Image (cartoon, rainbow, N blue to C red; front, top):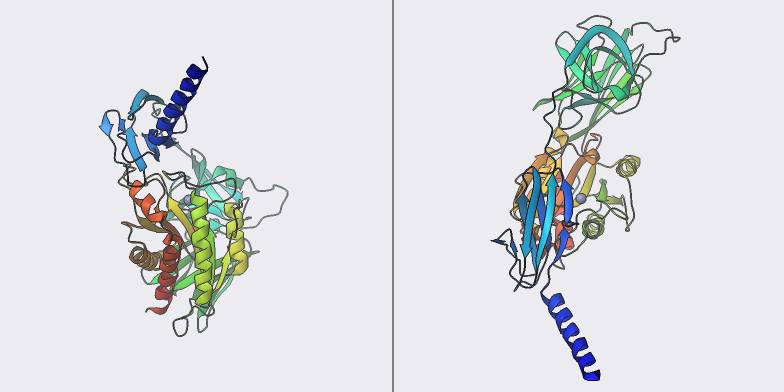
Length: 453
Ligand SMILES: [Zn+2]
């Protein structure tokens, strides 16, 4: 009996041993039963690289470090996915709810009426949609608008004879009836040019909407007074410096539009340059989880701290939005940037789910994002320098409306150094010198951008 006992314990230990030696673990999906409204389900995890794993009978690639990732395209309704390894068969069930064909909202037109913007930085858009690259400008609280239609959750704003735009209805209110209102009147406009800056002032008796357009050579700043006349547009054409930032201010009815030329640092240093470094996520927000369980927030911070060291050595004033593993909201990250008046803001991330091609294994490499035109060249230069340092695949430079990128008073880029969920990239980002090399790539890219003509 005693021997039997021993035998069972030994057998159990043997089985557990086998299990831990060969079993795979999954980071994604989190559950065996999931309702998904996505087109794809992702299987991300680690295994022994001697293990053979099939997903719906397709053998999957396992990197030398055990990392794997696989995409399963879902059909509407029930999807059964069978994962087989050397020692077990597991069934995963996904339910994809069919996307209801929604009727597009209809446009309702009505007599023009005045409405007032309720908060600062309200997006003025060129289409009645709340996402994408359709922002024209950010309106100030108290701006008087003339609206003459609505569609879905948006009001159509009449700007001039040839121009309408859209504002979310939640950002507008009816004007206070008790308040005395007269149609705003133009007072004066003025431009001043300095060595490295120009300031353009346009004064009205009340707050009116504005737009900013950029061409290759010019920044075109316009103010509209549609209640006064349907073609009352005040335009300032500003010659674009090669490297520039700009800021729009409004108090009472006076717009001040400032364009600053970026300083050229002397003798290959970053003397006089302030750079805000923003390691993405932190604290309760881990960011993406890698195949082997690494957390994006930790790698972002490592790169950020290395970057701060390097930029300081190069003479820059380098400020962090977080220096340890804590949660910082996106608004607070922007606030920290604003308070430090930087020339450049760099947000540091690693990518996860593919942005373009939905093949989670094939999507890998480094990409840099920007939003405003003035940050495009910086994004390109940093991308080039990162690829040289990291030997990752070129995943491109892209324009996208990330919240941390929308300020124009400093250049803003968001770096995705590699893909957390890509098995091949996981070998790269787990190398000891990855953070150091990424920091070097970013820092050298910034310097190259600032010193080259
Ligand atoms: Zn991220």
